[in-house]
Length: 135
Image (cartoon, rainbow, N blue to C red; front, side, top):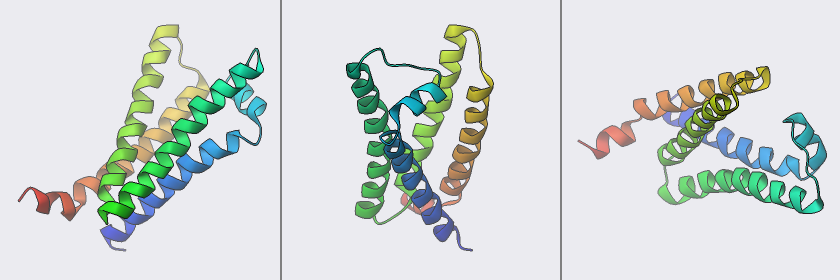
């Protein structure tokens, strides 16, 4: 399979992942809050959670798609996805250091995110689009 095809698949999967991850929270807010160990004390808290989580995740998925569409390449969208994923990893570790603990849930998220980011980073590094733009 060509690198370009793999890059398009990666970008599509990341866009769908972010969009679906944000959208599914709308189906059961309480379940998502409890799964990550949170609770909202009021409807305003639930709305704030929806705004922050859904807005962020759906917005990233849409941004990945829009950038790919207008740039006519998967590379810049993959760069956005990798940057966001590395940011998630970084701030999971920062949060863990602030509270003094890294839970098994956080470790499992970090492991999956490292794999996602490394796949994207590999594809970006191997991409001829970036190499040709600096040549």
